[in-house]
Amino acid sequence: MIKHTKLFFACKLLTLLITITVSSCGGSSGNSPPPTYDKFGTPELITMINYNGDIMEPFFSRDEQYLFFNDNAAGGKNLHYSTYNSITDTFTYIGEVGPLINDNTSVQGVPTLDNSNTFFYIDTKFYNPLASPPVYVTMFTGTWTGASVTGVTPMAGLDFPSPGFLNFDLDISPDGNTLWFNDGFFSGNPFPEAADIKIANYNPGNGLFERDPNVDLIMANVNTATHLEYAPAISADGLELFFTRLDLDSMKANIYRTSRPDTSSAFGPALVVSSISSFAEGATFSQNEKTIYYHWHNTSSDKFELYRVTRP
Image 1 (cartoon, rainbow, N blue to C red):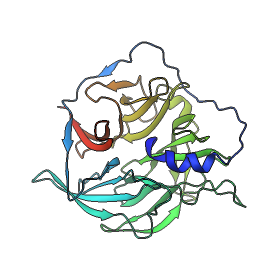
Image 2: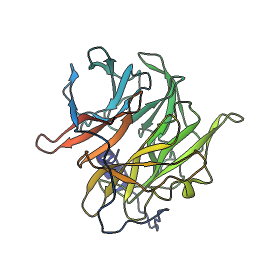
Image 3: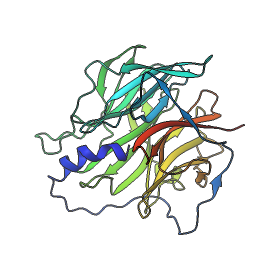
């Protein structure tokens, strides 16, 4: 969600006078090229019937019925969805996700869905640290009916109550019990000064997601002090994670892959997916997890396009 936040936050957060030291947990990266993950084949451009706009932050539902995404419209980003026909291997655009979710002045994006049809997304329309009382929430849930999202509710308890800090990007485990999301700090630049992937676990006792106290250990090989890590995509068993890393020196965004032996262990070293060139973000799994979809910035057309790569 790095690219499409810039219009909103550049205007919103330049009004804030902030003096703060930002630190980022986790390991550091050196100057040598990162090790690679080489199992995916050649990228394939995916066209969507009845749609020719930008496709960003795609999420392919685990039953492969729907592909959700947001656009890249000036002034505000909106949520959309398409249906998938597995027989013809085609995506057909249906329309905007609603009702009353999208607007034209803020970001609605990064959709994700669990197996119980609980719909999660980012919405910045209510974010206002200068309000009284201030509002920091940017993550919302509702119920996906197959044509709309109902019962929209803000996610309480995960936002960071300080101006400039906000949650962006998220993915939910298929069972709905583990949320992977971002903490970021924005000060008016087109990208955050800090971004790390965090974890929250669902507590059935209070009905809330609570931050995992072991996240720094679990994500030590993912989050860095020098780059931005965001756009998590977690496998159904919780053992494989794809994410995006933005190198602030080169301004290149690449998709990385990491894994772990069990859900109580830390993730291993992060490997850049060698077949996907920069500027690529926002991986999402196919049902069998042999394919990942993602968006790629076509600099010739200045358009964000939907691609996929497949492994044996």
